[in-house]
Image (cartoon, rainbow, N blue to C red):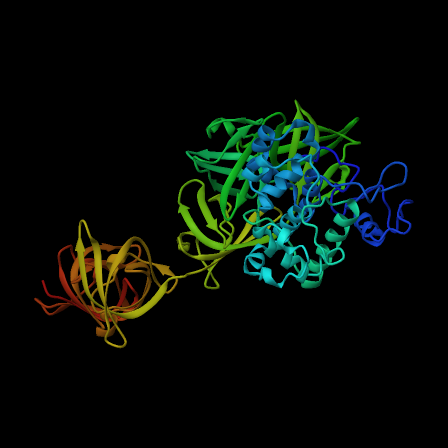
Length: 607
């Protein structure tokens, strides 16, 4: 939304640089009671005079001019201005005389601030002089004191003409009297009289001083927290749009069907045709409220992998992530580029910077480069294993970030302070992501799941329900839990199979609700017994190990200690391991060295 122009009265941008300088005096203020108020407004940037050096304090103020003044109570960012215009611009254009277009932006602000309603705006005469009681009402609304006005006691007014004040407006007048903003004229309020520039200046300055004294700052309700994200559309999946900014960070947005999406200011539907175009996404209260896409310029993003001096400038070699290709572009030696937010010349560009270009063919028209390092904290909201692995993280502000992890060049990953593989990451983990030089360099994960220690008392498998365990904790509490098919299972740092856990084993499990997400085998019932009973499956001559199925159906690799022996119970003779055949029933005595490895001191072949 652009400020169309200013009026030579009381409409200028708050605190902007103006023609009136600090300490300015207008030549027609000698003896004027409001001189200090008018000069203060001029010094603050609220007021300009006429070209002849006068300010004409006795000139009447119209309703339109008063609204322009009151709008200045709300300094706004460009993002908020754009949103206000989106909400009220069409209404203003359709209902206000175009000769007042110089005030359209400020009137939009007044509607957004609740200073007046759309119905009131239709009914009011903007070009007519404003009455004192009307200005009082609008000023109270602008100061966000309407609740105080509703609770005020009209009988406290002592003006001799109180009865002339419109009944519904008396509470507003009480508020302004109590705040020291109005005091009357010879104990009269004169509610229906016009307001000149002197009176308006006094009321405005006193209102500003009141807010300052109370430490009050005004903002537009419903427009707080407006965030604007810009970048290139890197993905479209149904109603989900992914935007890659100039630091290579990819944000994910859900675009509701009710949100207006425009391409070059024309409404369009979300589609894959938007990919590669520049977009601005506006967010309020974590919800997308508008998307503007523009393809009037060609945008390129990627990693700068080479830069060389040319006769007229520099040649840039840029690796484009979406195309997995290196493209060559030329930039003039006199072109101004931005590096980490500061204006530089192309000589400041270095290899491995992340760069965003606008180009005309192969010629660069603008360049923005980043080398930034920062952290993102949040929770893993999605994790898809593939080539590449897709990781999505949601932060506390509702932002969603997507990362593609190259299996051949994974970042450093820790979980609970220990270095782990990517398979140890789980949805729901709290993570801190370390971004170095615009690349994901480190993932530090912490499980948000509940830890339960206990003994497995029952294992039941069902095709539909899956595997259910009953675990008895240290206080004899019993817990029925379903084992997640994707649960990770470990003994120490070694990954094992879930079917290696048997009844009687002591485990530590991470749970989310009634589901087991991770299992750590602490001790096995077999370990405690020092005895293994099972059936031989095979003998490996290289490792000199038997593969045995124990009574729980778990595979165990059995080796023989150096002084150990194998006894054939039928003949009473000692034999070698290689003499054992498949289907031999054995009893081994010794101890487990791992969840599935048994070191035997003796083995008895029973059949």
